[in-house]
Length: 255
Ligand code: 3PY
Figure 1 (cartoon, rainbow, N blue to C red):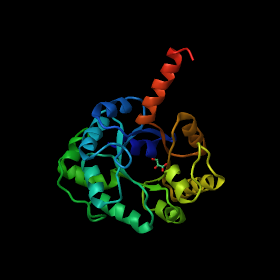
Figure 2: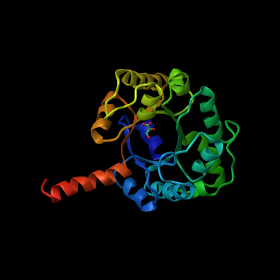
Figure 3: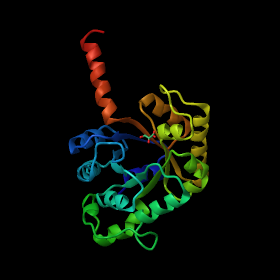
Figure 4: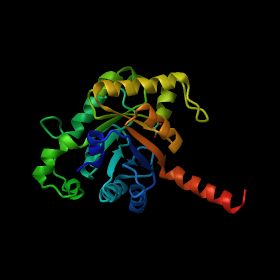
C-alpha cells in the first residue's frame, strides 16, 4: 500500500509532509509519528547517504506513512537505489528538460514501460503486507509515485508538457526564484515568482496531476493549501529542532 497515493486518489485534502534532513531511524520515527502524511528523505541537501536512506525509509513505512526520497541528482542509479530501499516515490531535483523527465520515468518503471532493474528483495520487505516478488513486479509501476521539481527556468518553460509525464510536479521556490532571477530575500517573494508558482499549479491541474510546494512553516503551508496545492511540506527536522529550543529558551529566560 502507498498511503500518499491513497490520499491523492481518495481524499480532497492536501497531503502535508515533513522534510527529513538529519540521519537516523529515530528521527524518521519521530517525524512519521507527528501526524504527517509523508516524510521526504532528503538525499539532495540533507545529511543522508545511501546507508542512512536505507534506515530511514523502512522506519517511516513501518508506521503507515509514505517515505519519499529526494535523490541527490537525476541519475538512473539513484532512482534505482531509492526505490529498492522501499520508497513510495522519488523526487528529482533541478530537472531542466522534458527529456530529463522522460529519463526519470524510464529509470523508475520496470519494463516494458521503463528500464528499472529487478532483483532487490529489500523494497518488498518494507511493504505491509509484504508482496511476493511477482506482486511487487506487477504493482510497482502503477503504485510508486514519480515526482520532479520545478525549479529552473527551462523546466518552467515546459511545465505543461512535464506535468503530463509524472504524478507530481513539486515546486522548489528557493531554487526557482534563484533561477528565474528573483531570489527569495528575507522570505519575500517577487510577483514574477508568484506567477511562476501559479503557472505550475495550473499546469498540474490541467493535466489532472498533483502539485507540490516546499514551505518552511505552518502558516505558509496553510496559505498554499488554501490556494489548492496538493502536497505541501510544512517544516524540516533541522529548523524545527532549533526553533523549538529557541522558543523554550525564551520562555525559560522569561524574555
Ligand atoms: C527549494 O526551495 O529550492 C527546494 O528545493 C527546497 O529544498
